[in-house]
Image 1 (cartoon, rainbow, N blue to C red):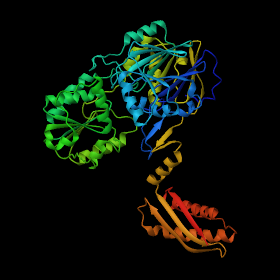
Image 2 (tube, helix red, strand yellow):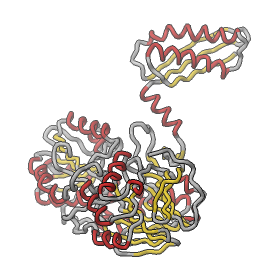
Image 3 (cartoon, one colour):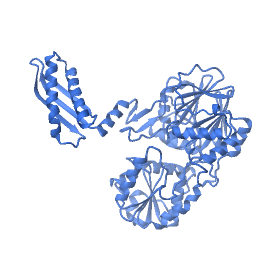
Image 4 (cartoon, rainbow, N blue to C red):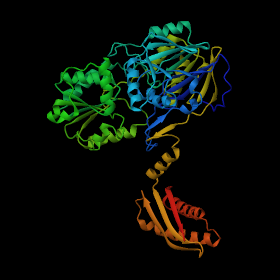
Length: 558
């Protein structure tokens, strides 16, 4: 991957492809396509913050790139209903509410709920199914069924005068899916026979050899967890994993347990899935959270959010003994029925440790076959490359190592190395005359959502990191600039330092002397005096304590 220059002006008849998120991170998936002045978008998702983003709620794709081109957008196509593919859509539609949005019935039902939460109106949602063909401006979209860890996922073929793009979305090739809906390999082959100019393929599991395990193969392991659970049983999974919840509900009936949903998104999503027929809830199995106290511990299974260690999710609050209704202890079982999203290792580890410390038996992917991925492994990707035989390949959806591994798989099947375009967010790729080439780069920086603030809150994030990791020091001093002397202080207050407070006695005298020296040199400006304090303290604490804290000097002049 090389540093790219500013892209050239787009020529007529050329299809420009710009990933605005999702290439380099597992999240904020979004790709913009442009030809002859019209823009189409595939997916519009969020990235969830890591520990290096304190106080940040969500991270958006590079929506700024579109801010002065909103009227040129003819369609947004959504491949499926996961947050990392739909979560940023409300923020795009706040910029222009009437952009036509296409997606499957379940995907749009989840989207509609989000838009209502954001108090958006006048949006245009059009549901599509596999086999449908939709024209929008210079684009023709054909939708194909794919198998994933959420029902109703779609791949999309994008036909333009520059050629045909096949975008897989997130997919795998489970041949025994729980809902009987398999990936449309016949459709992939049909498109390949006609000619696919650019194949954009899910890279998440490109480093994993073989084929992804069937969902149905989990049932024996899940059943064993139910068999040996003698107390309270909590199953944590993604709030969108309808198939997993279906398995848990069926097992609850088999083992004579009632089921209760915990977590706002879990309650909302499962209600939507049930209303649309994607979730079959056995009669009498569900109870309300307020009814939990009526049943013995071994008579219920709690289906909870928080499998990724999210601090405010139900499972984290349970692990921290902060949940209003649920406690765990000796004899209880907690099942983490999800894969680990890269970057969440520490958060999940803390939750597991917290639950274990309380006495719970924690079952997770690391010690039992209780979850399978929703993404195609290397064997499936090789199969698809041989089936489609694309002219060009652009790996999508994954960290840099996943993209690179996927590109190497394409080369193994005969795609020329120069036709495998491995790029990151912001790269500009032009498809012209049957060839895809990286021609430039645009800014695809993170856009943070911090409470009600959307935009560049980088300084605030950096400040929080410093506060959390390096500590905080305030120094208050009163000076008389006329007499050029320190009247009071410096008074030093610290946070995040375990050292004996007397360790700062030495630097107090240094600050005192530095201020008087500066005033004797004719410095009477408050800001400049504060900088003297900051430099003196910063130099001392760096040398003495090997720390770089946030330093807030206050100099009051009289």
